[in-house]
Image (cartoon, rainbow, N blue to C red; front, top):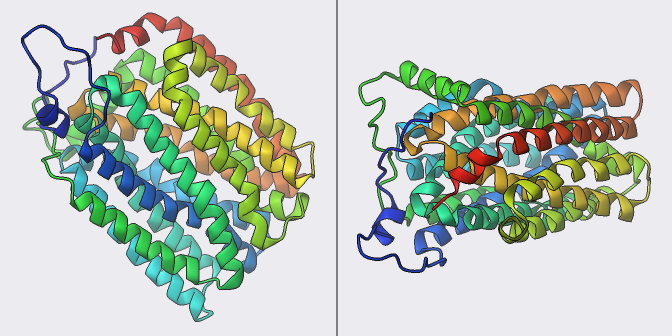
Length: 431
């Protein structure tokens, strides 16, 4: 049995007090602090989108070795393998809003450094590796805090909608705006989009600074424990929860297989689809459209069709467009298929995030989420290096074929898991 949820001091509690009188219809409107969180998410993900296009393009100007380029993806997610647990523990001991602010300010400083080296012509692939690694460290703190703070801002019945809007902001700003604009500006002046990122992260930090309230969880379960003991408590809780333990394994395999083609995406676009560098972001634009639509409709589709059916279909359908990408060299079709895959992935991300937030006690969320992401995102560097090696040994389309077939097999595994635990999932969202 899962431990009881501890009491948290949160904006949701202040603005939505419990009542002992007869129940009233739930107000589905999201509060002001959520919309400020949404604004900060949009600004920081705009910067992430610029990075998503510009960093691989910058790497491609420094080397065309598939393994060296794939290492960029591996290094960006390596901190999730090494630091997700300590970052989650720190988030559970800190004001989560302040963690988000400081992480974004650190990212602004790192992009200032990178922009200066690009502007002076002193950038190297090795310097890029260091900056990407440190950006990944900052991301472990920011994302852990951002996911943990949402249940403190909105009610449980608003989690699907809140996560849907945040995923929409992430997908839309990253690939619908940030990636194409970043790629276009990079072709004109390589340092310019990097300078823009400095401003975007600073704005995100400023917006979160306007959110009033205390976002440090009440440490009622491990009140007197030290840092190491609290970290271990999160690992034990996840290991003891059968549903989340199995979900972690499934999502770890999924993320590893998704990163096999994603690690060499820039080579797929430039060499297989033969798209000019300036138009790289336009091909990736399909991901933004798919992610945007998926995030917007995930909550509604989940309510109408059922959470388990919706998540099951999204899991088995997401890898099929990736497999189809291995069979085409048409830029329009390739971008469309990539967007279709992002559509299903976005729906799955919204619903699985809400499931974790509903199941994990608020006090333990950072640590359990850190344990979860150590496995899930820690698999991405492994898949990225494997994808680079596979592309170098065979071809870039082969990496997409392997990722698609493997992802479908894992999707079937996900369906079996969901239906086996359907009663527990339903109970997690019961009023």
